[in-house]
Image 1 (tube, rainbow, N blue to C red):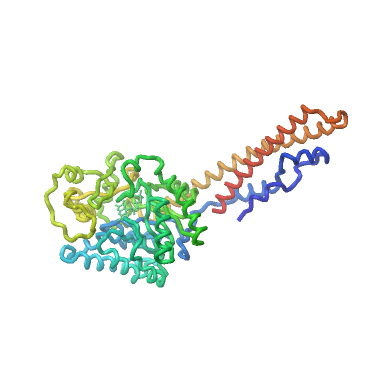
Image 2 (image 1 turned 45 degrees about the vertical axis):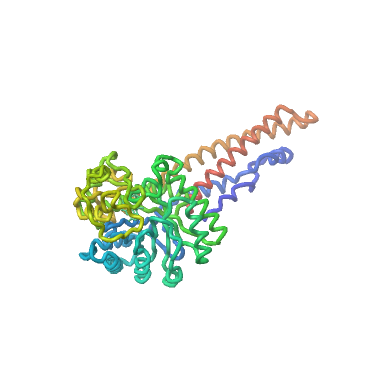
Length: 482
Ligand SMILES: Cc1cc2nc3c(=O)[nH]c(=O)nc-3n(C[C@H](O)[C@H](O)[C@H](O)COP(=O)(O)O)c2cc1C
């Protein structure tokens, strides 16, 4: 790790006479050009790589979480492939029982069976980091949580509601499983932490912060989605500050994963630079060979135009983002035929008002029957032009990240170079003024006042450049050490 702070106040910049030098030091700290050059040199030789991510004692080679995608979109196929590529592969629990024949007879039994079987299958396919995503609002949330614990997944993500009550924290800790609520704000993080501390004397290991551009259900109102104050960038800055204060208060470092609209390696670089430990991505992973949905589901992404991706009012009481189609507009207009709810899988569900069951609609889409269902998708889905393997996607993201970081480093070094040139010029000017002023002191009692004024102005300018230089090189050093 480089210490940039040592650049200040170290060496006299040049040999100017003692009296002038004392004046020189009044306003301006000196800068060691030799040390500056050595830091520049180290930064120049740095080769950017995608960093790893640490969640408690869980080490993840790549800071990429494949977001859990319910009703059969992220199962063992996708999750194990992502885990094999160094990210966190996530199996989503909700609606997973629809894979089983007896879902309509025994919804909960089917969910539990399918969930356990997919976790075991993923484990048999990968030694990588495996997570699950469980919706807090599900009627069988606790039994599903038990399955995840019994199967000893590496990390459990809890979304669609704040996980506060009935967290089996003792069992989770006994099995060394990490736990991560999914939230939409720094405020929610603070609330979860204070409640967990009171109830369990424990804290989550990680938070996923999901912004308003995500696919699937959203934790924002329509007004918030339109409001730039709720951009993922702003939410990330607030979350980083909140987690720093939580760290100070409870002495626990909680990892931050951010998602919703993260599309490219450059995006990953941007959010990691803001202080996130990793990103969660859903949409990009849908368009992979290994995604567990049908080809038709994936191709819906390739066919989608920007204007096709929009909001829906989901029966579960939240807004969602999807590729809008006739099924959605028919449901909104009350034109869908009546249907029978298999079992009340979500206590808050208003399926009858919405004129459809979302699990059935998403399951139909998963199987490729898009006329009797619809596809959840993030705002960026229309940008995807090709279905690729998970390995290729991860490679694209890594290359994009390293390019973005390299170009940021180049920009910083160019600025440092320019500032250094100006610094040296002004420094020389200050030295000359100091010498001339010293000569004037021998001729006049108080020396040449105009010269002194010029000298003071030049030293102030020099100090300003020095500060800018130290700030810029510190940012460069930060990139290299991050
Ligand atoms: C098809 C689809 C299904 C999703 N299903 C779920 C889900 O069941 N539970 C959940 O917490 N998030 C779900 N999400 C959200 C993702 O986990 C992830 O946070 C989100 O996709 C990130 O935004 P992005 O799509 O812009 O990458 C879903 C997203 C998509 C695209």
